[in-house]
Image (cartoon, rainbow, N blue to C red; front, side, top):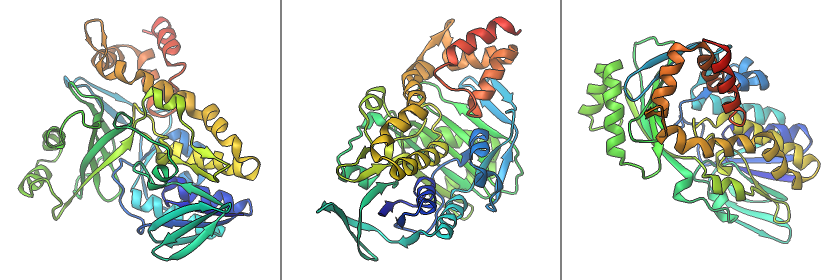
Length: 385
């Protein structure tokens, strides 16, 4: 069986690897060589434990054992996950995973898929590297997936977040991650140290505010961490400079109603979606690397047995969690608790309360789910002081 996978990021490359190991013939397409994707690059301790190639692979990564949460009113809380998590350069992670797929037998084509058509039980692809046919087509081409649109899966503006930021080459050595929440906006800004640069970024709901405002909020924070970098960015009018690279992108952040009706596989038409193309990103945190790799695992398993099982598999594995995250999003960012914004009060309580702090620590590490979050918070509040 011939499989064509469009998109050679973590989802597409891992899927190619898994399918080749199961005896499938796989062609993997991406429009460009591995590149520095607009993303923090964080890989949770849960993902490191489950996927050993992330933990033991040769790509350089920054291991992080400390995370600082900062509320909109500048309350701070530092938590230490039970196990360190990793931050990758997305270019280096993509290259690691592409080479792993090639070693398993996948054929990688650095080529743009210009046209795809399903007829006679086959997919016919016209690409910048030539024409190809396949028995099954997989869209792994990110948040703005062309394949998703071609197969008729529609996301609306409410299903996206917008992110921008700068990668900054700096002599600073930073061994923590910062996450700072925003006043009157959903989302947060971040500092993620990588082995050769620092990723500063900010994300909020799509069209919730202007890119100019997001830039100003992020630059004000960068000025507190690296005044020289902030001056260079301002002198360059916010664009890429000698030591900074500007980026911007949309991210999936699916609405509850979209989760309820989402179908990312049609065996009759021989297509499926994985990773960001399927919308598999945590709507609260924006974390997507784990779900990209996990969805590839599940699709590989389904294609080896019954492709019709894929939708049931991802819903059973993580669909309820991501739907619950979407359900909690408005309450988390805009809700009030005891007369203060929800996030503000959570940080304040965690500063004083070990039980709440432990829950937040596990939530950040990917060890605590959303479905049973409320019961654990209540239990922790009763057991610890």
